[in-house]
Length: 245
Image 1: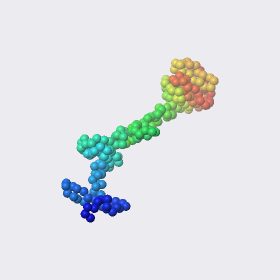
Image 2: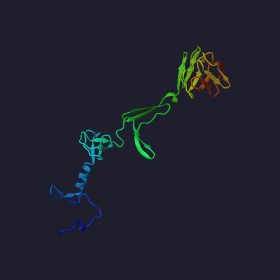
Image 3: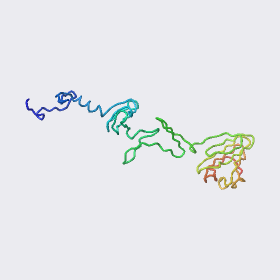
Image 4: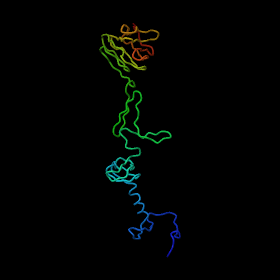
């Protein structure tokens, strides 16, 4: 075996963690297993910690740390001690409600969902709540006294006396209103300056002098805003005989 070269040693098909290799430690020749070498190499490369490793785990740049509490993989971006090493998740530390969002041809980034029309998004720690808002919903109200109407609401008038409902002062194209008669007193729609209501080929007089009213107890009317703030148009045929002034 004297003067035998490493290249003259027999080869093996697969290495084993129990295979022994030679090494020199502090000037002394020693033997160690491949398993020991791998454990040494990975001890600084892959670590674990119960929670965010910042302020708790030392690291070198590009070493990893598995967060056993939150199931997150952190990477060390700045080498340092337990107090100075800087660890970040795949794209930094997400804030409330952030998701990893992909982009064709580019790296994914963290971002929050954007609320569209009539949608409200509320972000919290570990949660995202998406709700309908604004004109996305339509509510029904039973009324017994006169008052102002709000867009995207339906009104069931229920009184022995006339109920007068005022058109909304502000409205957007596409907003809706519905009025249903229930009480014997009936209903009337009042208008502000510049407002009017179209019903088929008829229209109310523009402004405060114009109105549309029920004739019979159960008359109904469905309206949609066709000019913001001012003009409402009946869609579908009104039920009953209406008085248009």
